[in-house]
Length: 446
Ligand code: ATR
Image (tube, rainbow, N blue to C red; front, side):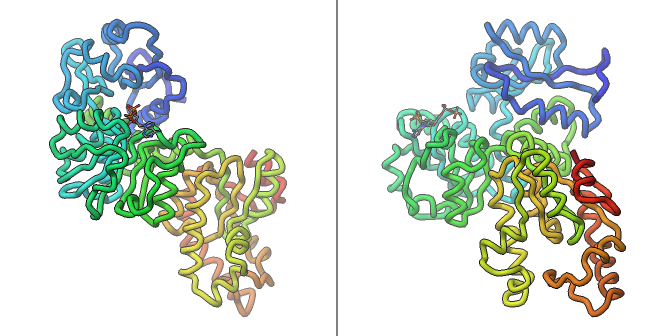
C-alpha cells in the first residue's frame, strides 16, 4: 500500500454512474510504476457538474477525467478548451490551468496510439466506421488528423452520420442499407455502435462480403471481450482488437499530460495486463517445465477452490484427435506451436478455471500476452534433480526422448537454462515445488 501524505496529489474521474469505472486501475497502477506521489479516485457527481468542478478546482485537485454524462456539459466550467477537444465536442481530461482547468480529449489520440502500438498505419488509409455517436465522432476526427484519406460512416440514423460528415470533410455518410455502395477495397474498420454489449446482440450488418473488405477490425466495446464483430473478424482471419487498448491509451495520454512524462511501452503493457485481469481474468495459469506438476497441482487447486480445470496439452490432443507425440512425429514442432498459439487465443472468455500450460507455451510473446489476459500466472519451479526423477521413463514427451539418465539430465538442464528467465519474468508468483506434494503446493498457492 502506498503511503498517502499531505503532499500526495489527488486525481479523479467524475461521472454518474461511476461505480464500475476502470480508470482507477489505470492511474493508480501508473502512479505506482512511474513513482509518482498521487492517488486517483472515482467521484460521483449527483447535481451540477459545473459546481462540482469549481469545488474540485478550489480544493486543489490536480487532474481529472470526465466520463458519461458530463463530457459536453463540463465545458462551461473550464478556463479553456483545447482546439481538438472543441472539434470533437467532448472533453474527457482536465489539466490545471489559471486556477481552474483546461479541457482536452484523449479519446481520439488514445485510439490512434492503440493502433500505432499494433503497427497499424493510418496515414493514406481508407476507413469504414459503423455508428455515429460520440465514440464514432472521436474515431473520425482521430483518423482525419492522422492522415486517413477517406471514411465511409454508416449509421442507422443517417442524419447523425451526415452531421459528422459536415464537420469532418473526409467522411461520407451512409445509411445502413447503403453499405452495399462502398467500393470493394481494403479498409480499416471500426465498430462504434453499442451493438455487442448485450449477449443477445448480433451483427449490425449481416453480410460477409462487407466484413471481408476489412484488413483490420477494431471494436470499441471491450466488455464483453468477444463481440459478434470481433468473432466475425476472427472467423474471417482478419487482424483485430477491442476497445480496451483505447481505454488504456486515453488514460495514459491523460496521465502524461498531467505529469509531463512519457509512459514507456513496458509500463503500458503492465497496465494493460492489469486491466485484462480486472475485466476478464479470474483464472489461474500454471506455467513451468514439463514434470513441474502443473497438471496434478492444477487439479488440486481446482478442487480446493471449486474451479474448473483444463490441461492445454490434453485439450489440444482432444481437439486434434491424436497425441502430441503423433503431432510432432507426423507434422512438426512448428505445427504444434501454431496449434498451441491458436488454442491459447481461443481461451479468452474462460472464467474461474485453472489452466495448466505446455512447458514451451511461454516462449512466444503472443502466447504470453494472451495468457496474461486470462489471469494470475503461477510458475511451478523445480530443480533439475526433481525433474529428472519425475520424467525418466516417460515416453509421451517428444522433446525428452533420451538414451540415458545422464543425457536426460543434460537436456533438462539446458532447456531449463533457456526457459527459466521466461518463466520467472512472466510469472506473478513463483512457487518452489521440490519435495512437496501437489496438495502442499496447492495450499501454498492458496
Ligand atoms: P457513444 O457516445 O458511446 O458512441 P451513442 O452516442 O449512444 O454512444 O451511440 C450509439 C451508436 O450505436 C449510434 O450510432 C446508434 O445508432 P443511432 O444513431 O441510429 O441510434 C448505434 N446503435 C445502437 N443500437 C443500434 C442497433 N440496434 N442497430 C444499429 N445501430 C445501433
